[in-house]
Length: 223
Length: 406
Picture 1: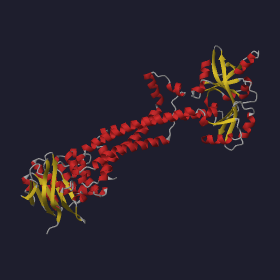
Picture 2 (picture 1 turned 90 degrees about the horizontal axis):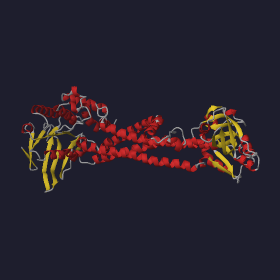
Picture 3 (picture 1 turned 30 degrees about the horizontal axis):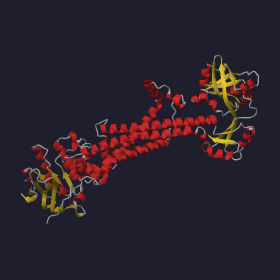
Picture 4 (picture 1 turned 60 degrees about the horizontal axis):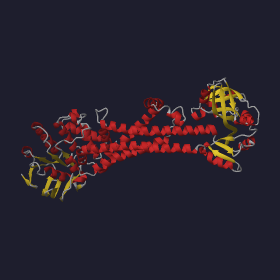
């Protein structure tokens, strides 16, 4: 059996609304192995982002458990391995506006405890890999949407995580740039042996994953 | 440099912006608060120091007086000089006198001093003539008194003492003492400059019919700060004399200045506190505006205390830079204090308040390191707390909520 790097069992989440409890995720279980890509498709408001946040430890589920493989630490709750075992790519890039491309990527390594010098070297190498070697000193405000997302991908990968969680990474990009980013994301993640969990509403991009799911009515089912 | 400190610096001073609005306004606000606090404290210190100096110059470190004039001051002085704490002792006599020059006259506080005393404080304030020319036929006048009499060095004036009135009662024709002005002194202390007339003690005794007696003895001590303890020790065995340390002379006045300084400190500190509240409020807005970034930082692995550090250190930096700016502004304002005061007087027409109320011809100042340390400590504390409150709020939020609310 391939190495499992992300495991969720019986995840449930509900929000409290004026009309009462609104279940968003219902008894969701999933396993993701190293090197594979998993897509989760669903309509707006179906709970895709909520699921990703539970898997990534940004929010606590009402029920169920999530475990992430951490280098040398076995399976641990995702909150304990944020930034090191898990990398995030967001729809709106979410770069620090006051930091340059190089500093944004290096910041993730610095937060993970890497010294400034090695962090910068790793950031430089990754930015070269995503085609931004000539944009190192540019602030996000001087980069295009596609370039910002490349920086965000480099930032997600800089600590060599075992899982990348991507939330609508092409949502803010035009069609051509979106294709480029997807090519890059799938290629770079696979090249590093990490797993990719991709949340998208695009059928086309979802089809490119090795395993595909649909989230509807809070239930995750194979596409 | 820790990453959160680097990010805090970048958020406060974003690249490409020479004067970022938040940092500039916050630092300026704190700087003005600190400067107003320190200017007031330093000037109040100056008033206190000047008054203390004048008191010590006029009365020495300790003044010895009795219910009656001291009968044998020379014997007392000889005895006191043997004490290891006593640096010098000199007898004096003083009393009101009427001075007249032609059609101009004025009331003077006449003091009989030892002209040979090389440490007479008046020596350093001579603006015209020579102190050493003082002899039985001459007088030294305060600047204001000389101006009132229209007298200059070399002019002759007449001096009447109350003892002359006694002589008149006894049927003798009172003749005034004729004295030549040999020097004019200007201490900057209006109470002295407008009234002082100095003549030799020997001549004073003659005009006031005092005989060998003196009104008091002035002591100079090796350690003036310990004047109270020394005075208490020296006073043992002299029940008919009072040994008054300089701290007790015009004690109420000095206490009033100290109290005024304390009250002004609190008033001015409120200004700094208001500036800190503004920083807290603005940092709160910044934290809310950066909610999504906070969520992202958590997703990158940032810990709760690192987030606290990120925003808390911004308050600390504003406090530190504001304090430094406040120190510079204090120095600049104090350098130009006379011009500033002149402008205020010109605009509001309040006249020469410093001279009239505080008795000084210039605004005095005295830098006290402890004032600067206290101002810096209070400012850093309040601005750091102002930064920490929103920082703790930000760090306590769920990252998913932070990202959703932004």
